[in-house]
Amino acid sequence: MTDFSSDALSTYLSGTLGDGGVTVDDVVAHTEGWSRDTVSFTARYREGGDEVTERLVLRAENELQHDIDDESLPGNDIRTEYETVAAAQDAPVPVPRVRWFDETGGPFGRGLFVMDHLEGEPPITWDPRDRQDLYDAWDSDDRRLPNRFVDAAAGVHSIDGAAIPGIEDVPPDEVVTREIDRWEELYRSAELKREPAVEEAIRWFRANAPTVPETTLVHGDFRIGNALIDGDRITGLLDWEFARVGDPLFDLGYASTRYFAGKLVEPIERPELACSLLEREWFYDEYERRTGRTVDRERVRYWQAFSAFVMLTICCWGASQYETGSSDDVRNAWFQYPVPGLIEDLLAIIEDDRL
Image (cartoon, rainbow, N blue to C red):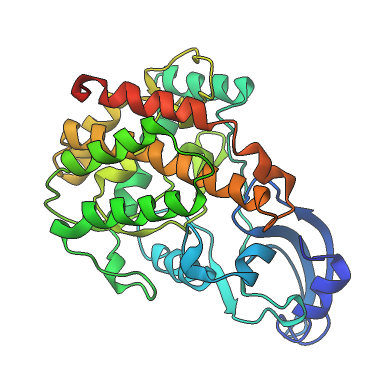
């Protein structure tokens, strides 16, 4: 990670915030977000004669993203992510207020943006303690957190993705082919060994492509682990780098995968709960009620299978970056381990259609 020390941040922010120098302390590097370098910090400065103290977050390209062509990366460039979060501020979606985007990043030498800090923590569904908290939220009488998760999905899909700079508009009849082509190309670029089960799945995706009647903005990584939770509230939906125009049911299928309910290899305690938080059928029914959009269960099933392919592709890509020496981040080496479980999940979904 780039040196986002108190001194470096103070130098960068002075002259941008307030009327003079900026003092920075309480810097925290957030290692849970692997796609960017993210730090939070407390900034103190004077503005109009008043003393201002605020907690902010800086999100920047990591070294790999800065050094290679954006077209070969799994997600959007950082400017598009900034524009997407900015657009979401006008929708019924909890997101942090963005302050500014900086193409060069001053002394840090890479694209970045700054936003407000929000209270809350992202639950880790692979942690049994966090899973239990989510189970408790589902078992509660009011189900406030599950309801707010559905509200967040509906809010994302109310955004006009085509109006966001950097997001390409895609007609409904081209969406599925675009998705398959995009992720198969990335999978091929990261393929360390040929896996017959994945080849079978790719053929299945093309042979069983659903008809998509409409497109909206999709978050692309919609799950409870990308939400800040404070009690029974979702204070912020994060990590918008996979946002694109697509089938809104993609996000529902993605959130419904067993992987994001906490399954790596071994079965989990309550596999009927999407994201360990809400029963899938309840999720779909409540989404229909909020949006008036019919949730075609077969389409959700398709995207659930496809999402397992997306995740195993991202895992293969991360592992290949470490294998080839493109990245020395040892976390990328870990990405090889979820792949067998994801293949198992994918094949279980399409099992009835297999020869």
